[in-house]
Amino acid sequence: MRSRSAAAARWGWAGAACLLGLLAVATPLVLTAPPSVAGTYLHAPAAFGADLPTSVSGRVVWAQPRDACRPITNAAQVRSSIALATRSPPGATHRCDFAAKVRALQAAGARLVVIVNHDGRAGVDDANELVTMTAVDAAKDIKIPAVFVVRRI
Image (cartoon, rainbow, N blue to C red; front, side, top):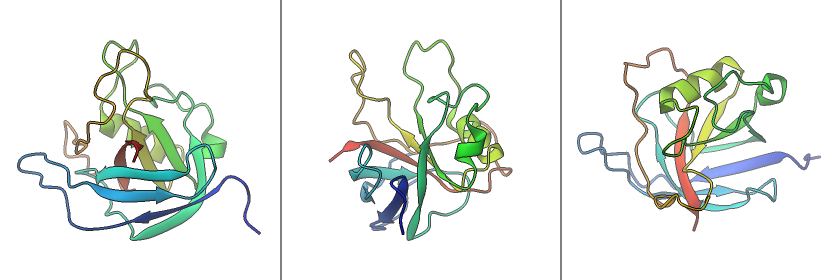
């Protein structure tokens, strides 16, 4: 029996990100549960970490704090899950790069990280901007896959 928080994700893997120009190839990501995040999203894999699987299913859990830029306070829930976190919006008090978010969630035990491009808050005009997540360092310590998504399509 599937719990309400179980999720299944399918990637339509039409190609890989073009890292030279840092252009993202938009392919659909389908989240089937929980209802609060179910939908089809455009996504781009990170330029670091493990390759994305062709499909994955599991519990989807929001990181606490949601931006994953401070210590993860719900590590017990994140462990063995697909962790969601938001991109740090411009002017945020606590900001960190993509690799720092993924590292924090990997340390908390996440199997895969999904970074959501902001959360549709007023004043953020790039919520549909799809980017390839890069790291300021080599990020060889990141062993889990990570993906960047924009709002539902």
